[in-house]
Every structure is written in structure tokens, then in C-alpha cells.
Length: 371
Image (tube, rainbow, N blue to C red; front, side, top):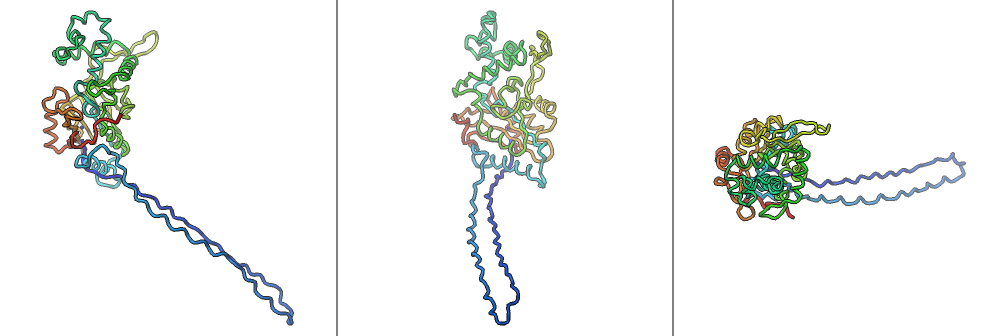
């Protein structure tokens, strides 16, 4: 789940148009045969040529203010680090220039691009799916963790830890084709709202990070999501929300198999996890899914630490940034003691290695997009 370096501003200048004109004047003289000696020589005929019109005054140059592509970021060291890094790697002929195909930037999703508190978005989807499917499973009324989910006791439902969560996910995310699951996800996102902010989950994204994604792409970067969340849970909405197409999303994978159903080839989601794209799995997912080491990486928790370390270890300039949740008024303040998005070891490493730490409270003018 974050990172950056220095700052440079894009400059724009007004273009002075130069008005050129040419004035052509010519006088034609004609001669007659020699007159008789007695005759008076003809008087010369004067030819009048209009005077050229005065040249228009040149248009004064209009000073254009530089366009700030990161307007939701406060001016300061964090913003300067981002802009400075981008300037270095995009300046042709400079010692740190990086060709566009190598400008790879990876972003964690939960807690880095959108809110992950009070629970992960995919867990909220899972709980709603349990309630939706409960009529088909009367046994869930007496079986944990389903019983506690249905009674509204989330703390008890999750007391079983990863095992309980995995059981809930397997019961609600598998047994259907990939196309069917995509439709289920899209319908949920169309109506589901965040319990604290009362807005759709797709609007609980961080405005400064949306600007950062667009800023990097405007400077020739290719942006990827690398998240511990389910790959097929994210893909249906990432292009609309972040401008990141599904083929640029890397996430955890459910077991999937090919089948013929009524003569039609389909992919079916089966119980079981094929790959967990979290912690040390993230560099592996990047290697397999992208094939290039990123030069910029962004996260917000210890689950992103290995991704940030691996990205930072490459040659040349690197931008490694952590989003630090320090704003308890506009969002939620949490780090070392949180069960969701815990930021402890990665924060220590950021301090030791000089990674950029973006404080929500100090570096962001706003949190969410305006409604």
C-alpha cells in the first residue's frame, strides 16, 4: 500500500504571433519616339503610390500561470519530492532520464487509493453476500461464522481469524463463472454505501491519489494496482474509478478451471486460493504480471513493505511513498496498533531509508472527491 522525491512544475508560455506584411510598389515608365525638333518635350507624368498602412502594434505576451496537476496536495516537501522525481526521470538528455516503457508505477489499493476502515471493502461485500444467500443455506443459522454474521455480531464472526474469513469468502465468491461473479460485483457496487461516510464505496477514493495517478500518466507512466484484494473483485471497477484497465490490476486469485457448460466454454471459480498477492507475494505478482521492476511504488501498510523494498532496490532514481493515516477528523487516524492496515515496520524502514511519508493531515487539502 505508497511513495516520492522532488518537485518541478510544468510550465506553459503564451505564444506571440508575429504579423508580417510586404508592400510592393512599382512605377512603370514608358518612352515615346523622339519628337520633332520644334516640339516641346512632354512633361513627365507623376505616378502616386499609396503610403503603406502603419504596422499594428505587437500583441503583448500574456503570462500564463503554471497548471498545478496536484491541486489537492499542499505545497511542501512531499509534493516537491513527487514533482522533483517526475522531472528527473522525464527530462530527455538528463542523467536520470527513464524511457517511457520503463516508467512503471504500482499502487496498493486498500488504504492507499480508497478507504479501508472500519473494514475492508471486500469484507463488506462478503458480509452482504452471506445475508443474501442465507435463505438457501438454513444450516448457517447455527453454524459459525455465518451465525454471527447473520445476527450482526461481526466481532464474534471474525474471532476465528483468517480461517473464518476464508470460509466466508469461499461460500460467497465461488461456484459461479467468472462472468457471473463480475455481474454480482458490479450490482453490489451500484448500490452499496460506506457505513461511515454514507457515499458509494467507489466515491470513498482519495482525491489526492486520483490526481497523482493522472499526473504520472500525463508524464508517460503506466500505472498498476497491486493489492491483496481479490483480482476479480477489483477489476470490474478499477477502470471507471481509477482509470486503470483490468489488465493492469494484480491481486489475489481464486482457483479457477475451464469447463464446457451446455457446449459453451467458461471459467469457473472454485473453492481454494491460487495466489495471495500480499506481503512477500506482491513482488512475485509484479514480476509475473508486469515483468518490469517499478521505479515508483505506493502503499500504506506493512503488507506493502516487500513491494516497496523490491521497487526501491532497482538502479537509478526511485520514488517510494507511504500514505500515513494521520487525520482522525476527516478520515481515520491509525498506524502501529491497527488490525486493519497496520503500519509499523514499514514506517520504521521509511524513516531509515528516506522514503517519502505522506501525512493525510498535513499533505492533503482534501480527502475524498467532491460530491
